[in-house]
Image 1 (tube, rainbow, N blue to C red):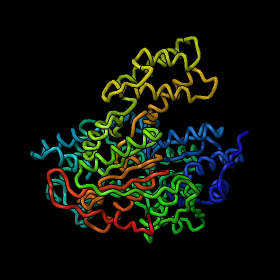
Image 2 (image 1 turned 180 degrees about the vertical axis):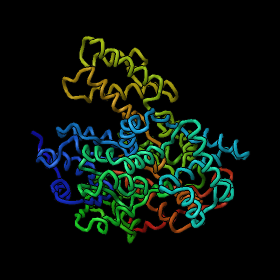
Image 3 (image 1 turned 60 degrees about the vertical axis):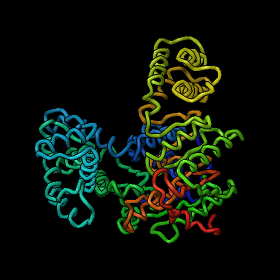
Length: 560
């Protein structure tokens, strides 16, 4: 029998064993919040406090939901629904919609762009592609705030922010209104409509609300600092006045305010639930002492900021570098990474974090010039690569056919047949990328428990593909800071740390600067052992001298 409290520190144990009323867990970066949350569920099931099928654990990414499910299964717990807000809402909508309306649920639009383009055409308006993207963002913002069109007009007028394409408020509001009509004409709903429709269904159909509440009696919400007003309204309806609620979050990691996220629900939890319990997780098990001290320094005095306590780890100081140009900065990063790899650091253990996607081009060029393999997060997803899809298909076929042999033998036969080589090609490009991807599948097969079958491995691959949970490949990662949230690496480079780049140029208000500060905090706390911070004084074409980022300057010698 699994000891559901094994390995927990004192604060994590409080999280796992506190019952009777709402619980708010304030968990800093690297403090083991997912561990505490999954052990609470497992302990609750073991103690008879929870029935697994009545637990709804809500996350913000399919990868996080998949990871939670895997951790629960390792603790001997199955049957818990670990889902994103959208997937949980969609399941309910798909189940009840036919009986309520007598028809099928409308198709979900994969993108707003074609619908907005149709809207603009009907309104005889012409804008460029960038404005269409901004209009999509504006529509999403209205919906996650749960604003009606009248609410939108009132609230948008008070924001003091420019409207997409320099259009007037009345014109943009008319686009919003016509957009909704176009969706209805095409029998489609968008991503936000899934939550809105579920909320409306539960509020108007009492029998449906009663059935959903009978299904789920326990709610746990991870990354609660990122909840939007719309998500909070839906959570409140799911709860139906009950208080068996656990929320976990960190106000210092609120980095999606632009998309409607608000840390106010986390920070105001004690006022909303006076009978609730608040527990702080501040022991950082991820990062070395210098990194933790720097993180504390960056967020000192900010609302909800926790004081992290490093639990051992590396004492390597933070490395800082000022290059003359963007090209020189990229070359510094590439040479340093090559040296680290030659000294034994696995490429998978290194990440370069950028503020925006265009920064990757110079870095990719410099790294490949040094012979370093690169995986850019946000390019073709691992499980969408044609050779990976072919491998998964053949592994599934072998499982169905009952091909004789051990798991590793069967998988090796398939992967070598698809182009895996005994040694990695000594050059970069498509051939090397294919080899690295197939090698990652081979390593994953070898990490399976002894005696695992091909069918079990195929099921694991299907689960991970559905969650977008790619295995590590033999290459360093380049990713934006936003995409790095929830991940960690032994070695992290944060580049482009100059004013106008990080914080980004359009962050001009106190509110937006503080969002950039939190983003910087997230960036540096991805590092486990070594952290490299760099900037360039000049770009390729712009010869004006850049000032170091205020965040970089704030790290005094007292805060390495």
